Image (cartoon, rainbow, N blue to C red):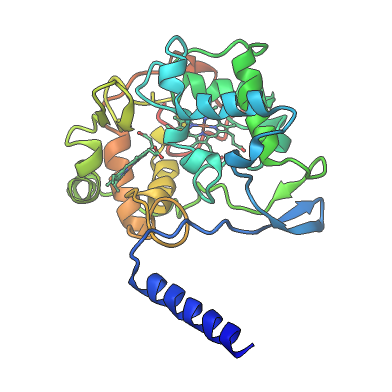
Length: 297
Ligand code: HEC
Ligand code: HEC
């Protein structure tokens, strides 16, 4: 009995000593979110699922394919992607990160009326909107296996939740739009906080195999002027919450919380207004008015 206690104690202290000395990066803790259906909270401990656990799922192959397509879009779908961009270049941490334009609610959020389209659009059309604008490319065939796979991935994120459920996790994109941007200041802050990865000319960086390491922020290989990210305040909220990107020891992916709202607005005004591809479909946007003030056309 006594021996056992001693053994346990010594093992414990050894373990403690190890943790005290180790400087390993602790895996980010998965966050719990509440889930709402209409007015009611139906769950308080939703966690985004982990791909490693998908093995054995009846739809595993399609979900894994969808996950790959979202992470390696440029390489796997060169016909549909014009920019040097993957879906998850903007949808941070495989579309699971709070304020990182996550897909957690996408499966149930559509069909939905969108002011930009002036009509109700379904999830396939929403995805194709990102293909045509953010990826400066061509839409996928709505009946293709690729479209089904991306949707299967998004459906899996809300697996087990009742129809119409909303995971209470902020998708991001909100910032004070009364802040007046200062481009000169933005340019200085850009070289200080962003250029190391995204380049002095916003060109980004590919590895020797052509895979995207840092996606471009402007130029021919970036998103076009029709993208949400081309709008000053959308981009400002995104970079305030997710950039400069780094892996940190605690909390979520990305860093965020480095830039003030004003910094973010200044930098965003600077990089969004650099040259980038045009978007022919712009003539059809906001047919019923209410165009936001930072729209590019
Ligand atoms: C340049 C950045 C960027 C890229 C690249 C991009 N998106 Fe998006 N996407 C956005 C932004 C910004 C939003 C709007 C999020 C919001 O509502 O605040 C969005 C919205 C969405 C939504 C709707 C989310 C919701 O629940 O309302 C889906 C689904 C989506 N994107 C899928 C994709 C797919 C699939 C790809 C690749 C083909 C892609 N996106 C590429 C920036 C991007
Ligand atoms: C340490 C490297 C690093 C720094 C510094 C950094 N980023 Fe990023 N950024 C990334 C990576 C990596 C991605 C793609 C996300 C991913 O792959 O998970 C990204 C994605 C983006 C995107 C969306 C994709 C695109 O190309 O449009 C924008 C916008 C962006 N960064 C802006 C900025 C701005 C502005 C700054 C400075 C405030 C900044 N980043 C600093 C690494 C960095």
